[in-house]
Length: 331
Image (cartoon, rainbow, N blue to C red; front, side, top):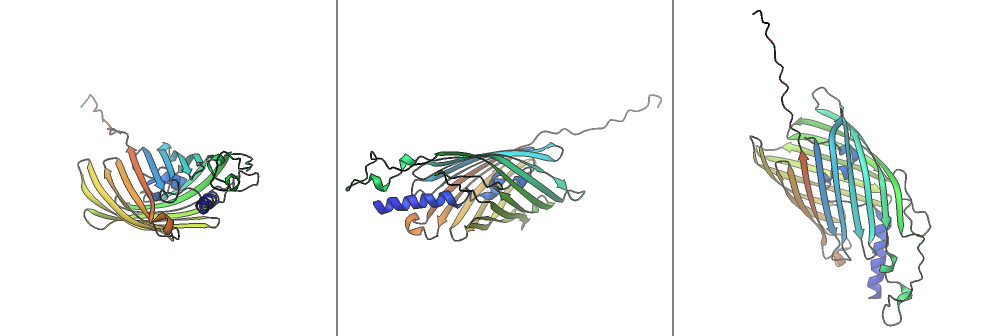
């Protein structure tokens, strides 16, 4: 019992110092992924919601929820967006809340808009808190069992932290046709390296560097292939996700659109995951599940995490501008 509690504490400490929150369905959480993705869609407004539940078999589940919204071409080629994210981890309810407004600007590199470049900026608030009384400590062992009424004699300078954080990004998009495009981008986050220590010592949040790429390519009358990858590097932590999706278009005519999507991805040295989803008019809904194959497998029993995503795109009705020619009255 005592060893299990120590392992739980060590696992919790590792997560504190390790990395930012991540999502498996990174293609369907664009504002969280990179501010340069703001405005990269066909429509006027876009809303995303994502929920992730993981490590339920190892400790108390880590629950992550995010919501993002965007407005495209709000002023000329300026795009505005924001996301809010909450993450609760472990026995001590280590909670992270982030609110990050974002903006991007679309530069048309060619007159036909086939080549686009978007720089992006992200600034916001990061709030973190912890409940130290929810843990078990050596001092609370009375010789036979743990007694939570015994003082743990641990002194936390603070159990809450609020920081300002800033990130940047850029992306290049090549769109040959409606179903053929390539997007590549990079980003850097936590540029000001905010202090996230609870014990008085200054623990700077590491800068996270990111690169991503995704593509859509028509391989048949009703079939598209959509490969993508994402790479994150933060301090000693590295994450590489790569895989592909297949889309089968059920119907796309007379304003009616339906498609189903399935994909397989791997997160190097950690997990493999499968995902399925459906596009229905302006809606998207998807679900994925991670199968853990890392050194944590004896504890995780291969179970990783389940994730849901929902998207909705709003289109303004734009009536045609008809120019009327007035005939002279002398004809």
